[in-house]
Every structure is written in C-alpha cells, then in structure tokens.
Image (cartoon, rainbow, N blue to C red; front, side, top):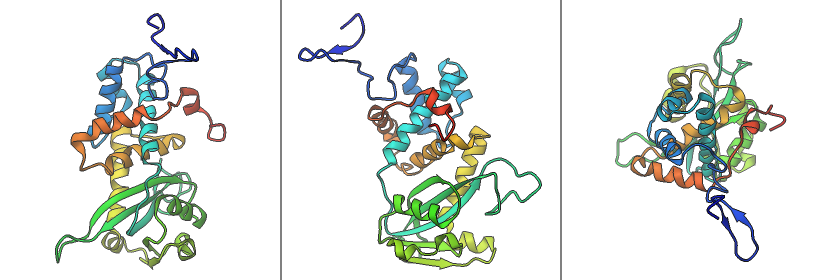
Length: 269
C-alpha cells in the first residue's frame, strides 16, 4: 500500500511494514543514519558517545542516545544464548562513581555496580607460548555473593567447564553446581592476581577504560547495555571486516525497545 508504506496480506488483510520486528520499527530517522550508527558502534573499539554520534548524523542528543540503546539491545540479544566452555577464568569488578568517605575500590565498595567476568583460557599453540584468551562473558550482577556469581556462571558457562577463581567465598560451592573449581587465594597481592588470572583482569581494565574514556559516566540502570556493547565487540575482535553486516542482521531480528522502557525505574521496567 503505497499511501501508507506498508504491505497487506491479500488473504487476511493483515498490514505490516518492512521494519516491523526490528529495532527500526516506527523510526523517523532515515535508515542511512541508522546504518552509519551501526557502522560506528561495530567498528570503533572504543565505541562512540551519543554526543559525537548526534553530530555525525545530524540528530538531537536524545535521539542518538535512544538509537544507541536500541542497537545495544540487539547486541545483547544476539549474545544471549552463547555459553563459554573449557578452562574458564572468573572474577568480578566494580564500576561507577567515586565513594564518599570510604574506599573507592574492591569488594567493600557500596555504591558501585558489580560486573562479573568470565574468560575462556585457550591452550597455547606451541610449547612455551602463553595461553591465549577465547570468548568472554560479562554481566552486571546484584552483588558479589554466591547466589549472584553462581547464577552468572550457570547462565554463561557450560556445565563441566573447569572454573579458576581467587579465594573469594562467593565462588565456594561451584562443584555442587556442576563446575570443577580451583580456588587460589591471593592474599591481597595484585601482582599475583594479574599473573594467575590475566585475562579477566585485562578484560575488566578495558571495560573501565571504555566506560570512562568514551561515555565518562554511565547510570547503573543502563550499565548492562553498555557492558553488552563492550562484550559484543570483544568477542568479535577477529571479525572486523564482517562486523557491520553481522550487527545489521542482529538489528533485523530483534524487537525494539522504546524510550519509556529505557527511562523506567528498574522495578517498573
């Protein structure tokens, strides 16, 4: 139907647009602008801020902000069903604003968000080579308690995988969850942490640089989508030539999220 730019079924009369069932549903922004946003978010390792994107495609800051969150939802949905396997390093980190009057780092931080991280450790290719990282999984969790960390691993790691962690009590009992587990207490030694669990610490460090360097400050209620964006690019770091097309396909198979849902309080979302 040219007058409405929709297709109508000759049998039942149902009408649908070509953008229905995608993140572009009911958009007023030209698809060429969307494609540029997808390209920038897929190709730039540091991501792109909503302010910079708004300037590049000529839309308002709120429009660019909403577009990016729609694309992040497609990234998150695309990775939802993947699980890690094999030998897995696991740890958790804290991101967010500075504490007032108390320690700004570590498991004592109260106003920061907790991000759980798991990274596959692949066997070295030749004798004497260091192990290399495989795929990673990151998620914002409620806290660093066993219930949260166990739930993260059950969702992101295949049962039977060998899990390596520090001595934090939140990882105790993983054997009962189907994960052979090796815990190595670090006794507060940061050098030992980076030596024994290099890839989770590198991943956490890169995540924090991405959040602070590109976006400066991320509200806790939106953090999971920013983490999903980082995770999506990280796991496709060897697919740069195909990333744009992969992300377009993800955007075409994901229902959109609307502004009211994004700004709703967490208990109302």
